[in-house]
Amino acid sequence: MARSKPRPDVVRPPAKPAPFDGAPPGATRAARTPDPTTHFGFRAVGESEKAPLVRRVFDSVAERYDLMNDLMSLGVHRLWKRALLDRLRPRASASLLDIGGGTGDVAMLWREGGGGAATVVDANPNMIAVGQKRAAERGQNAGIAWMVGDAENLPCADRSFDAATSAFCLRNVTRLEAALAEARRTLDFGGKFVVLEFSKMSLPGLSRLYDAWSFKVLPALGDKIAGDRAAYRYLAESIRRFPPQAEFARLLAEAGFERVGFHNLSGGIAALHWGWRL
Image (cartoon, rainbow, N blue to C red; front, side, top):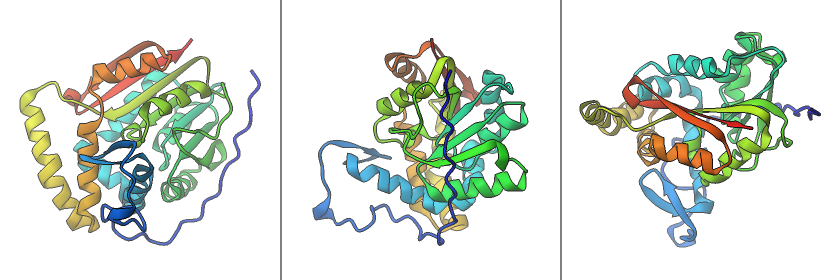
């Protein structure tokens, strides 16, 4: 298979962003376009508004992204990411595309597990900058290419990767179906796509406890630790808006993936989803 070599983008860390205030840059209420609409957390917004709003959230949390995941996953997101890699079984001859993986966790685990070249695509330069710094500290820059790009319009050639992953990204996209189609497009035949995302819990008691944590404790901690209650509130709301496990499996199948499946983690706080391009 002919592969196009991804062009790494070198991104310099930008200036420290202002806390997220819940409004797109320069927006006024009168200027907002209501149609077509999508959701930003529990809010209905115009499709053109969502990407700038999400960008501002991740501008705000980029430097504390690991802390954010620790708070949202109750400290177990690293174990979940290792479970994701176990579904792929990295090998030196295989290439990986990590979609929305700006801080590089999955790409570095892939490389450390014996996988071949990895490419990280993320829409946020702040996240990419954090990932590049961390990869350099771990001696992993040589095996990882970094690209600024949109999950709904990936800057990658057709059939250019053997495996693809996405961890905690897809609930933030504007058009989920478009992002799934793009992931499939970039996979070679026989390639596997594995998604790690927060999900719907199977135990009602656990669900109530996690809701209390997510909507009462987490925003307060975000305010105290990061000075940014709104960003952490959005992240909690975005989890509730993501499709349940069976519905997301259906969307994967409708996007053309085959042998689709999912597995709950930590009682359904998160789930692994997968499908193949055959």
